Image (cartoon, rainbow, N blue to C red; front, top):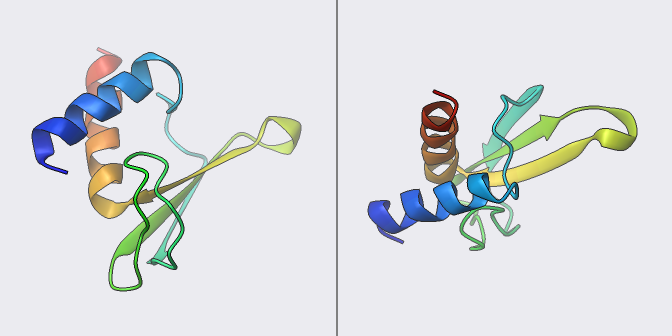
Length: 83
């Protein structure tokens, strides 16, 4: 997915609430294990870094998994949307 398409996708996901606009309560970075990215819906393969982001706690807890690149775009776009 090219950069422009990824930015547009992230804006759409932020706009309709499928991705959070707040910062995560914790973040874990590790190598991919084939799990599907919550942004681009492509697997994060073993040679790629993935981020596990946790939001909230208890019954309200949510976890998102993203490629490093998807995370970076999400972080930039969520901050831009809050201004």
